[in-house]
Length: 133
Image (cartoon, rainbow, N blue to C red; front, side, top):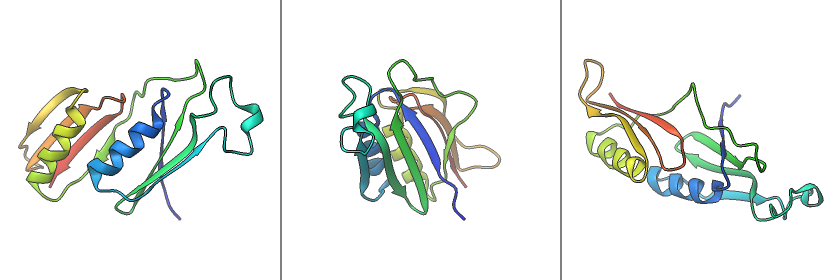
């Protein structure tokens, strides 16, 4: 059994998955556009180059993504993606990259449970918690 996270984007899935691959040292990014899929004829107008299905492996996890249909994008709420780096340096590096063009909810700080913990929403609107134990 496996469990993966699916994230919908507001037309920038391709950019986001490549960013996450580079940020987290992930593997190859797989992207299937609407136009290259068997569903090409059902693609919304002007949506041929948007992502129907995307995937990047980050460690042992899979992060899946797609572009929401026109007018169908909803801002993520009630959830965060969690990243648990093993070093403070990696936590600081990833936090800085995620914060670039995004917004910091809780700056990185030491807590009673973590050497470095912080919350940030990246430039794609995805909220993240970083927790270096």
